[in-house]
Length: 352
Image (tube, rainbow, N blue to C red):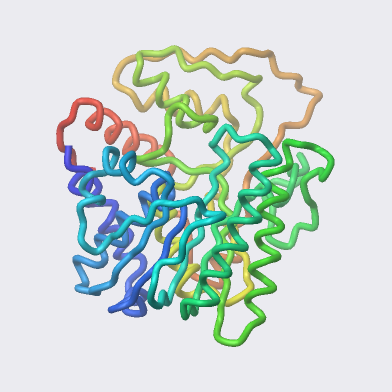
């Protein structure tokens, strides 16, 4: 299967909704950490597409711990002459030579099974290393890919969480390592952005669907799609009442590039959908998206006296300041993801 061809419509979507932004990258070099995971694949796919369609003659250097593993996953990207891979750890990588006008720091994902202390140290030390790199290589704009985890637990009576919400993770809970690490990384970037000629922008990312999303990690929608493609049943581990929202990956790419190239320095933006639904509803939506009838099993009975957990962003700031909005609905997002996964398994080409 040719992954680039299979994503043609999605990549055209990204280009359409980032029109006028790409000229800034013309003839420039961009450095990307975390460029081989879910986010990274979409950044590279959209970068390669814009580079080819617009003749940007831009060049990307991508830091990864496993270049060979990525080459096996996305050979069409690994073989491109405008994308170069640098093997290394985000905390200790050797700096490539030459200037880099733009940096996207997307390294360290919440999906890796890492001990909390190691997770926190990797985020903080990695961000410090990336900022050191940017300071010495002529970088004018940096995007930090952060997370909605910086807000801590969203109150059940707060339907949408805004960027100015003053909450935070519990600093005494080991499970807060990821959120606290991202909070520290944001502060480091905010301090760095005070230097003349350097802009740091922050994308606080929530939940997503789309091609390249792992189906065997802790992402509920990925697990549901895996179960559905396997013939079911789709298993909901809890009571199905937590509320989540999902942005499609093509829209995600639009938002990330827009924040990097257009967002003001020192500003944070929620990245995600503001249309929430409960996990049980999500499971049924995935079940309806496959051709065969798939059963949904919810493990626990819900307690109607207990308010639901929520993880849904407000996107008013991104909409009003940057003109960003969800373009592809969740039903369509799930359908496109399932089609891509099916064709990936069969090795055939597809058009979305």
